[in-house]
Structure formats: structure tokens, C-alpha cells
Length: 80
Image 1 (tube, rainbow, N blue to C red):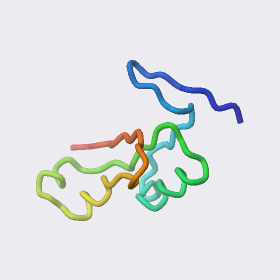
Image 2 (image 1 turned 90 degrees about the vertical axis):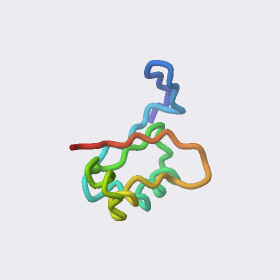
Image 3 (image 1 turned 180 degrees about the vertical axis):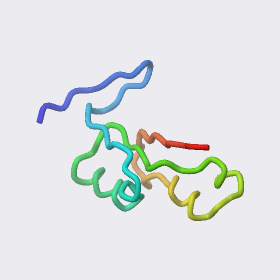
């Protein structure tokens, strides 16, 4: 697989691999596994409810956790 840097606006990603958002799949453990074995340039989480964030819903807030330690380009998806 040919990995090249990818530039989107003023953001330069380490490579052109992007982990797509997948409901019920792209939770924190899954994202950590992909960083370990594939190291995508951009990691997306599944859709989260902005309303649930306003009400400080613990389950929803956990869905927004990013990988620990290493710097990560992370994209969060919200819906109303």
C-alpha cells in the first residue's frame, strides 16, 4: 500500500489512510487497535448527539475519548 502525506487546507496528515466513522464500531478500543496496526492519518468516531453532550450524558462523553499518549488527528461527528 502506497502511503503518502495528505494535506487538507492547512492540516497535513501523516498519511492518506482515514478511518471512517462506523456506528457501533469506531469506539476507543477499536481506534487504539487501528493506531497500533495501521496508524491512519485521520481517525473518526461514530456520530454523537450534541443534545446528549449538553445534558452531560456520560455514555456520550465516553464516545468522544481520544487515544492516549501519542498525538492524534481526531474528527468528531455530531448530530442534533
